[in-house]
Image (cartoon, rainbow, N blue to C red):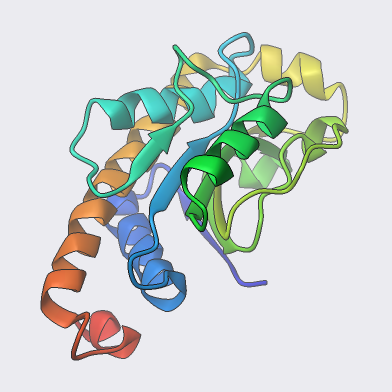
Length: 198
């Protein structure tokens, strides 16, 4: 599974991430398929608040035609994920889901945003068995993993989490506009190769 990694301090992080996202959408989204951004996490833990922070920031930005689920006010987390997934698939029978969550990694990877195809396995970093979700997923590596994961998430710097949330939400907002432009210009006449050349 190909995984892209961009550091949050890269001055072109928003542009790079938005274009990578749209290339995935061009390759994978079916005509007329609704696109949902599912932001997973809880504001009860600083490190794990990345998802709901992104959802809240996105709710304040232009993001049509994407649907946003998971905010600080209405978070999607371990205790309600299965229920939320039932609601999603009842409301949108065949959605394309972009799953977003915080993650832990090695020291060198902290601060990186990753994008990969395939479902996200939320809770894996803290040994929780939760249902996989998403056709593609984004993670923000907020701290070092491998030991005392709950404690590490609780003691992650809010500055780091907020910086990543701002970058990812800006990239998703830009991707929504690029996606609309792609559909308007190329949907009936072009393939993903045209997008990559543009």
